[in-house]
Length: 518
Image 1 (cartoon, rainbow, N blue to C red):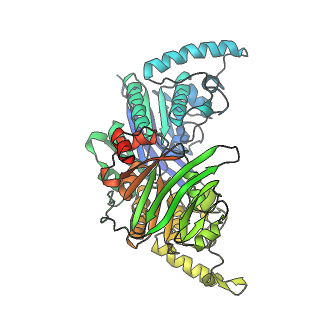
Image 2: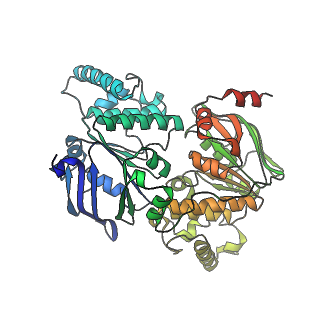
Image 3: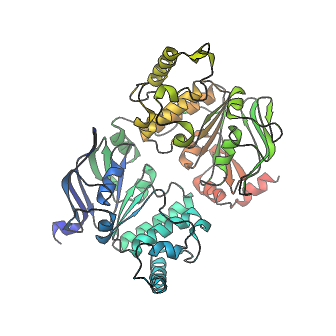
């Protein structure tokens, strides 16, 4: 075999700038045919930019590409598809009210007669599904399918278009562990039948479990390539960040005290009449972290919004300290903050920050009325700036510039800003939603330390995360939510991914069910 024929993708000297930002710096990369190649790096390392260049979304400023041995200069994603490249995005690109079949042929119709296209597609998709273990009901609407099956549709769509190279961006972010395991089996089968796979993920465990080789990016540069069997989590983390990173959360056993948050039969029905939270009851005590595990979209977002005063309960109540909130006695976010509750929302962009605001303005959102930030009827600009500057340095927010707009910070530094704002108000109860979503490994380490520090100060912490590693590392007790209900509770020391994954899929193991009813 000719040397060039060994590689599905070859990049040489790929360079890309966006104004003053040097996103990719002379990238060299070779991806072997019929392999699973991982690419890891911190936020802003340049991974997504590089994949967007390969898929034709961006044009490289300089450098050369070869795909399947041929020179490649795409003018758009259609050129990439013609060259045999498919991409499964982190946020699925599907039309929710179309069927699976309609989504697959969308943009790839065989002439004007849809009936002929649909019939041909149905036959080919049946073969692909059987060959690769990607069974999915072809006539079901996307909106009626769970996320695991929606992801299969995205993969089938790429294969239907003839993809011989498949790029997957954070493919397990919305999957249960069992769904992730099935995906890995599919990817291995695709690899074994000749498909080349590029896997972008921040989960080092997954990189080590499924890839053949891994490339590490840092600050726009490709800093290392290694056979997966020759590396480990610690080395990969150090290469990504440029320093040693503690991957294990250091914590002493919890010393729970009095109940600071009590939730009783809490329910919520949305404007469409759908019950999103169904008679939920639990307690969080001083000095403990209670984690809520669940696949995204199972009611945990609404639960956090109820406790944060953003939504009003339909039934039931919750108590912060000694103050109760119920349908007849609702509360606003400002009210629950006054009760001693801090809230780090799941989506920092939609609910935690205003991108056009400066960091110093973002830092006082929700707390702008406090005496320390005001002089009579006017805000004390100097006090706000000084306080923000000190907190940014304390929390290692980079760059520590209070006048910089929040849109110009990386995701990890935006998250630090939001968490610092809530923690520095010293609440008795802290709600933390997806604390490290879209955050690089260095910032994850720091954020985890701060969550445990709050617990050790005697605060009650309620943690919601789709990352099971995070839930198991930080929590003292774990509640599992499925379809809006709490389906079980585990002591964190007894929890394992298999059991949690089954519970997240609403399958409660017999011994847990028996314990719950004893």
